[in-house]
Image (tube, rainbow, N blue to C red; front, side, top):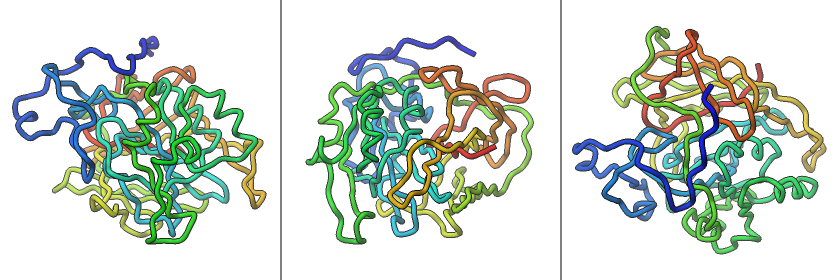
Amino acid sequence: MTTRRRRHPRRGGNAVAALTAASLALGLFGCSDGGDGPTRPTTSAPRTSYFTGLPGGPAPVLAVKIDNVRPARPHTGLGAADLIYVEQVESGLSRILAVYSSRLPAQVGPVRSARESDLELLRQFGRPALAYSGAQSALGPLIDAAPVIALPPGKAPGAYTRGDDRPAPHNLYLRPRQALAAARDASDASDIGLRFGPAPKGGRPAAEQTVRYPSARYTFTWSAAEKRWRVTMDGTAARTTDGGPLAPATVVVQYTDVRSSKFRDRSGSVSPYTETVGSGSALVLRDGRAFDARWERRTAEGDTVFTTAAGERLNFARGQVWVLLTGR
C-alpha cells in the first residue's frame, strides 16, 4: 500500500506521461464526444488521465448523480465519463455516480438525488464538485460538512435544464461546463490508486459477466472487435442519446459491505450505505478475461488499490472504467 500523495492544486500538476506522436496526431487530448471542445488548452507537456490512462488533464473533477430506473433511460453524456460507479439504493434498485474530468459532454443526465455513501466514496478525489438534484433534509448537514462543492439546482440554476422527452423527475439534465463555472475551487484529477498498462498474467476467458442487485441486473459482454465490454441493463442494451452504446474498457466488480443507513426515502424504504473504505475481493474484467483481485482503501482520503492474487498492482485497460459496488 502506498502512502497518501499530496493533492494537486486546482490549476497545477506535473506532467506524468508523454504522449506518442501518434496519439497527438489523432487528437486524443481532452476531446469531448458531443461536447464543446477540450476541457483545458493543450500545453507543451502532454499528460495522461489518472482515471482512464488516456491523454487528458489536469482538469477539475465533477461527479454527477444519475438516475437509473427504466424511465430514466437512455442516459445522456455517460459515454464521456472517466469513471462510472454503480451503487445500490432503496428497494434494491441501482443509481450511477459518474465522474468527469478529461472530457465534458454538452449535457449529462437525468440527474437525481445524492446519498450518504457518495460522500465517503468521493473523499478520495480531494474536493470535487458534486451535482445532484436533491437529498433528504437530514442529509443536508452531512453534505455541507463534506469536502465537496455541492451543486444542486439551487446553487447553480444556470447549469440545469428540463427536457421535454420524458416526465419529471426523470428529465433534469446538467450542463457540465456551467456547473464547473460555479465550482472554481474544485480539485483537479489526481492519483486515486488506479494503474493502467499491460494485462497481468493469468486470468480466465470471460465472454460475459452478469452482476445482480436485488432489483437490478447488469451484463457485460466482451466485443473483440471493439476491445470493449458492451453493457446491458435489466436485459436491454445500454446506449446514450448522444454517443451510442455504452462500452467500457475495464469493469470492476468490487465486493463490499452494504448495510442499512439511518436515512429513509419518501416511501419509508431504508437507504443502503455502501462501504468503500476497507478491503475485500474484486473481479476485474479486461481484454476478454476475468481476473480475481483484492481491493484496499485504508482511509477515506486514501487510494483504492487493486492487486492480483499474487499481491501485485493490477493494471486496468486504458479507457472508461466501471466500478460496480455490490454486497459480498
